Image: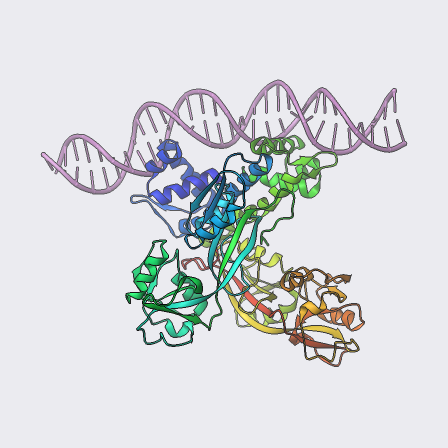
Length: 283
Length: 283
DNA sequence: TGGCCGGATCAGGAACACTTATCCGCCGTG
DNA sequence: CACGGCGGATAAGTGTTCCTGATCCGGCCA
């Protein structure tokens, strides 16, 4: 299971085409075909159906393994490179939408040039691990003392930068708007807005509530909080947000989320220091 | 970064010898030397000091990446193999020492032959992932709603099999033995017994208490609970244990651990089903 | 000082991993 | 129904890689 084969396999699966994968990888179509054949021979399973190109059950399974493996290989290489020769140039800071301001504040103390990148919650750990960023400020939702999920790509240092209670944002005229606290389980059948980059992703709400439901008619892939608040105020659905961003008087209210104890957490992601012990959570 | 090179590197680092690694891997010493040289050339860093053979700082860092990567590669291969051809032969069940009885009970409902392996807490997930075991029952300590750490080797199914409160085991004549509840932070300066396979490992207590200390004069690597209870009763140190195993009247008492909410958790580890969605926690 | 232990280096041959060229099955089209 | 083209499979050839076996070299101990 040569990583090269694994890589071409993932590209073929993503593009659903051997020829297109060949172009993207800088190989010939023949080489790509041989790569996939070699992988299939090695594992003794057919990984892709051809024409149309679709991963088989085994292929889908392999993809679930391949991507983290390739990510870790890239992270290892980037980390060792960084360790060998500290990078010149401006400090590259990344931040998820909700904490861009905090990232800017954090960086003001620093000397020299700075570039500030806004990224997806899922992308940030990857970009710090692969040395696309020197520093990342990331937010998300978790149980009170838990770290945010999905950062274990290797020995990365994680520091908690801030914790804040969460509220359910509802339109001012919502029947539950006068309540002082709400339990998530009672809201499974409500209508939600799916804003995975700003609010708590619905998949996560389902997981922590241990219930299905949380149906969303409106999806909000944007990164602007004000926009989401307007959507909620207009009655398109509820959203779980950090308490600080929901100010009263804008046509909507925030009610404390009581039952599954959940906090909004801001974490600073940094490559592990040159000599220190690994800070990762690897078993 | 060919996995073969990575593997040789880890073996050389572990055995602290090129020649010994060559024997273990079935290569010549020459090949091993070339492997390490190739890896060092590829990454542009010296990974090992020679004579004596010791990992450099960069080498140590690489080891932290290499081991999970190789483990995942092995897990992927094992999983696909299992998916391709269901294994014949007896059902192989693994269990950590504290839950061997539960594992046996769990397996009695099954037809056919059965082998029961007792393993280390750290080893069990690895052995299930690499298809050395068909099923694993594992215990450990965690915050009330958290999963046990260190199982994310891929899309493995994890089911909670039981949760139990924890107590601090103290000798009957200990000054704190009459208390009804204890906070871990108050016990950082006490003397402990380090029994990582039966009790809560001291490293974990330090982590959840957010404090140093928890010094142990006695280390108990064994897997026998009765033995550990005797050691605690004899006054060699304290231990955090599931409430159920500490019965009063044996010269020691168990006092509920109140402050860092901690439970003893038993998890059933199974390979993900053939067609189901990945059950792992991969980001 | 000489022998030995252990890693580095060198030369050569087998195996591998690309390329180019060609083939083959499928599908839409005139 | 023949044809052409699209897309993946296969074949042959070649440069590179990756082993082994032989040898070298530096440090250590007797």
